[in-house]
Length: 474
Image (cartoon, rainbow, N blue to C red; front, side, top):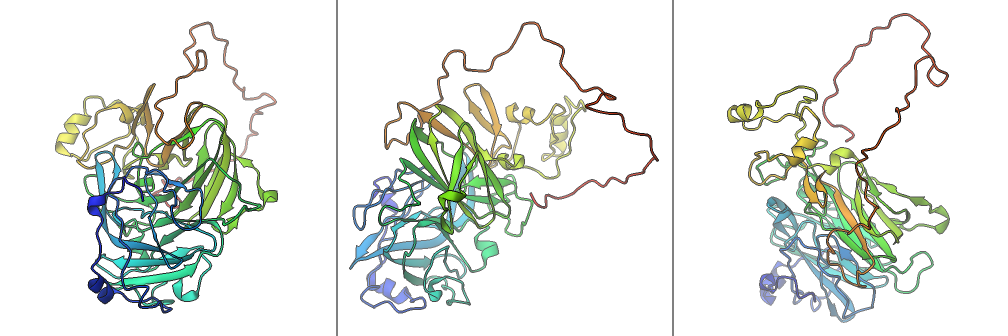
């Protein structure tokens, strides 16, 4: 069991109280099996925890959950038992910025569950939310009554009760878990988690890798200065996150040069995300449907992860450096973005902002020279608000937020070492620099040339222009 997990927050449920609170979901489990629940392990830190190397059950190479952890288990007569506690949590989304969420075992997202193909798994779920809940095991092959859809395949788990789910992990792959009860509220509040089923033997479509990272894509709408997500939001989210963290709160992915790296992502937001990696090409080797046939794989630098989908990418980390890794939708690499902020590019309003903010504290405009000013300026913002663009690199402001991190590739990163190696030291002559010599005239196409022929005269057409509103399809 990982020694970094907060021991002081771990607690036992008394046997009698647990037995009274326990209800069995769908198919019966013996009273002996549920007489004493496994200890619910909790985690309060938002750090990326070291991989949990199995010391019982079938062996496997564990994953690393970005800004998260793996849930320990106990073996009970050959069954791998876990205990999930659904409860309100406080998640630190970035240093100095916290949010009231719902999650599992002290965190949102909840802990990653790792099992091996063929394992019989028993998961106790205790409901400490203010309303009923359930857990759907997204992508699993299992008995219908264990699928976790409240009202359809099981009664919802009442407040204060514990249900138990039991099934065999029948196929290896990348999966997740989330409620199928009042989803609009519970998933908007951060209830989700990752599930990995490792192959029980060498698999023709699953390669061995040196490092295996996992995280979930999630989005929230939290007003500046507040702490609780708005659950009615459908399109206008202002915080785009990985594992409920926003840059610069997202940890870097630290690897050794020459490592074979796998990254697994699941999307539980309301839109798709084109995830882009700099400096390397990768192949998509798996989805929540399982490993992809090798004949369908090709090299990419961006893969689109649609709503409710999982993507598993693999590559050889053979280029040393600090490589950006992010969603390629530009608004998704920003924090706390106001959708009603006016554009004032080209308008000189120096000296007016401070005066206006005294009368209207929330007043904000896009800088007259663009948004980069906002990444550098010390703008007054409400307490407990993530700045729109933040983060500092070795050459100045990074001007990013939201779904942004870095792949750090180093020659001297030891195997199994996931610590941040610091900023990359570029060899001499390998950094872009200012040119002070003579410049040739820039080439531009000329109207009337063969490349850009002049338009033939025609009738004048009046066009009505309507300013778009909202962020539908964002």
